[in-house]
Image 1 (spheres, rainbow, N blue to C red):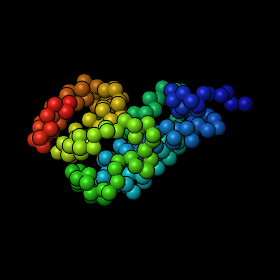
Image 2 (image 1 turned 90 degrees about the vertical axis):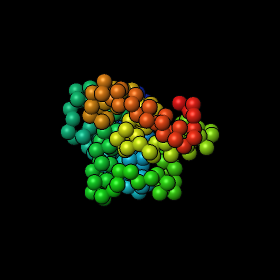
Image 3 (image 1 turned 90 degrees about the horizontal axis):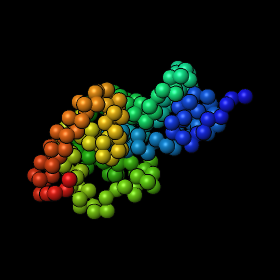
Length: 199
């Protein structure tokens, strides 16, 4: 008989999936699909492509946890940044395969990021002031995709610098410096469109 692991605890979720405990895979999907979809959509700028990438990322993660990784590796796995890194790699591969420009404006999509997968908690975090939100999006769109991604991970996904470093395959100190420099660029971009003291 398999020993039970509390599936409610995200720290144990990788082990629970590895052990094929009832409900573990469903919990993993429910817990992460919204955030991964929103992230992929911001990278790819296409809802269909983002959905495809997230489905592929989750399937790859589940296969790795159940078939490739041993239990010790699952215990040591920092699940959230690992899932974001899989999604990121697949999104960049997908974009290269589709010959996407890295700087296509977000306004080309008719839906807001995360709409079909967006959780209630994520919706509650959205700013009430739509004008401020639109200004922030315009400023973000003026940044290159690489630095924009750091801001999204830090402030929208609320990741620690260590988690971001794991996602983008960099050092924590490098990520801290890039986020600091990006925030300055973002302030300047906001000032160019007439928004002051937004940050």
